[in-house]
Each structure stands twice: as structure tokens, then as C-alpha cells.
Length: 111
Length: 117
Image 1 (cartoon, rainbow over the protein chains, first blue to last red):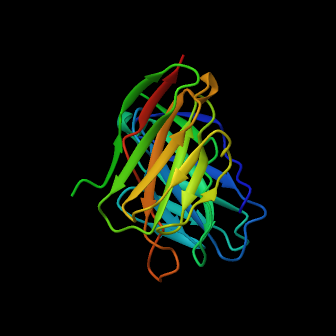
Image 2 (cartoon, one colour; image 1 turned 60 degrees about the vertical axis):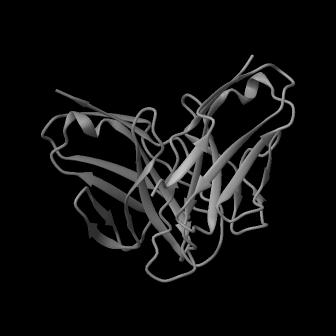
């Protein structure tokens, strides 16, 4: 399983773009990068997943460079409701295995 | 469609008591997981199951047992509760990841808050 490093916390203001970078130097060939979002008193929910290059959906974009040693979650024009903990995970898509979350990044959006 | 349901949502135990947390999913998912969440620690995997009748240890399995007798249910047991097991417990389930086009997305329950005095 990939060893994940991400910032413990970040602050930003409403309306700004927020980028959260995740380091995964030892990511395996079959590992996919997946991001989850967790609001207080709720379970995490899936945001986005990618293998390399760029993936975009209605919530966020995910940028993964060619060497795949890091990835960046981009949240466009954040609002107060984007205040949450964001988890970066790496796990294989081709076999059964445990899924490890880590401590995540606590994002605080200020008015 | 209820998704993932955890029972009970709140429980207070005395040290040494036993209890079972029930996780039920109605999405026909193969994989199921139990995590615990403590302040500042993120989510830590306790046990998981990749199919009916199978279980495996996660990061912090000591003091817990699990069973997956039916595909839709995953039970987490505490035989002799300790104050260190005070936590919020989350259950999750997902489709099998060995099939193409599946993201392996985990679907979480609302959590069960356990306090051990």
C-alpha cells in the first residue's frame, strides 16, 4: 500500500480555488489515487479517483503527474460548506486488499 | 434503498462488558470494513471482509472480533470493553474491485458512538 503524506490542515477563503497536495513516493503500479471528503459527524464520501493525468467531475479535479509520486486535489471556488477533512488514499484496483485512510487534511473555509 | 445502516448509533458500556455492533448493507456489496475514528487520528481500519464467510485483520484489530455469516451483514464484537475503545465506529461497504470500471468506492454508515466508562 502506498505511504501517503498530506498537510494536516489548511485555511482558505470563500470563492478561492483550493489545492491539496498529497505525496505518495512509493505508489505501486496498480494503485489508484482516491480522495474522500468527511463532514463532521458523518462518514467519509468518495470525491474522485484517478490513475494519471487529469480527472474532473462536478465536485473537483485531480491532477496526477507522469511519475505519479504526488497528486493534487483541486476544489474550484470553495464555499463554507466545503469545510471538511479530505483524505488521500492509494489502493490497488486489481486485487482484494485493505483500504487505509490516514489522518487526512482538515480544510477550514473562512468567510 | 437504505445503503449502509449501523446499529446502535450510541452506546455507553462499563469496562469489561461486551457488545456487538451491527452493520447491514442492501447494495449487494462484496467488501465490508470496520473503522474507528478518534480525535486527530483519522480513520483506522479494524477488520475487513472481502466476501461472505471471510474476515481479515486491519491496522488495529486487537480487542475486537468480527463475523460475516451473511453477505449483507458485518458484525463487530467487543468481548471485554476497555476505555481505550471509546470511539466513533464506522462501517463501510464496496463493490468488488476486481471488475473493470468499478472505482472501489466505499459507502459509509452514519457511525456508532461508543463510550466505555
